[in-house]
Length: 197
Image (tube, rainbow, N blue to C red; front, side, top):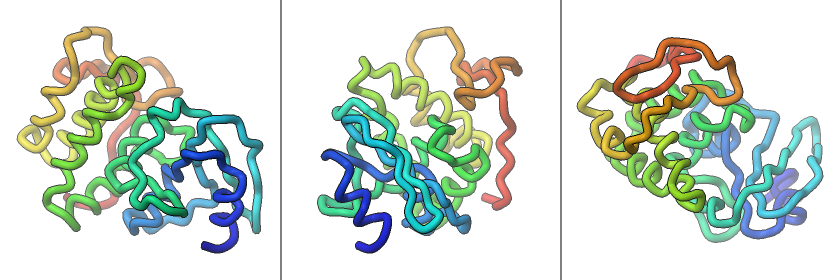
């Protein structure tokens, strides 16, 4: 490890997980360099800067800090976890279109990626009575359908739950937009990938 990774490893209480854009970059699922590093931690840590890059620590229930690619540092989120985090948490610094591009790259590199993605969606947010995984399933399923069609999105449809209240496609953005009747998602952003699936 070097530079900011050493600092994160030194200051982040365990368990921790580097996710968002930096994890997508680590696994070559984006061609963009992220100057911000999103780190999930179980206790508060002050943001830190190193050589023009900033690490922001997000206090997270320890039961939701999982999905590291390795057991020893640096603890980057596996690609499927990083994509889901990018789609569900804009504060981690990944736009909807960057997450969509990463999803296309991951599936192009590995035809079984969507199967693993569905398994991770099922576990996502399970520490919070599984409400997190239902909202994630709706968002991810909607985006998968937009990019790859309804057959590819079918496994996610089984995970969306029965609650009729729609969720925002992009949390922390405007609350208006059409509601997709299948996914029960308020489409408050447009999925526009630069890559052709």
